[in-house]
Length: 159
Image 1 (spheres, rainbow, N blue to C red):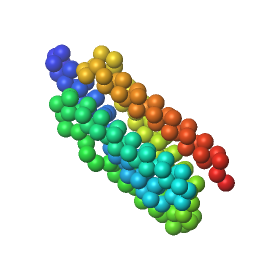
Image 2: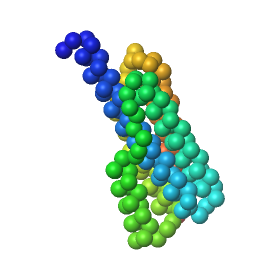
Image 3: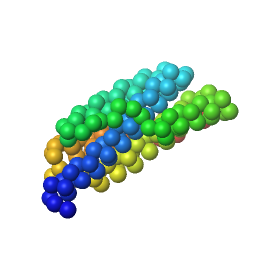
C-alpha cells in the first residue's frame, strides 16, 4: 500500500467514524425533542429542549468536519435510533407516561453516544487534518459526559 493509499484509507476511517457520530447526534436531537414534548416537568422540558438544540449544533459541526475532509456527511439518524424511539413509545404504552422513563431513556441514549465518541477518537490522532478535529470530538465528548452526570443526578432525585 502506498502512502497515498494509506492516507485515503485513514481518511475513510475518520469519515466513517464522524458519520457515525452524526447519526448518533441526530438520534439524540430527535430523542430529546420527543422527550421535551412528552415530559410534564417544566424544568425537564427546558433541559430536554436545550439538549435537542445542542445535539443539532453538534451535528452541524461534525458535518462541517466531514465536508472539510472532502467527503459527504450523513444527514439522517440511524436505524438503531429509530428503533430505540419506537421502543420508548412501547414502554410509554405499557408502563404509562412518566418523566422518569424519559430521563432513563435519554440517559441510555447519551451512554450509547459516548461509546460512539470513544470509538471515533480511536481513529483520530492529534496530527490528523484538520488539526481541530480531535479537539472538536473531545469537546463534544466532554459535554456528553456532563449530560450523563446531570441525567443521573436528576434520575436519582426521582421516585
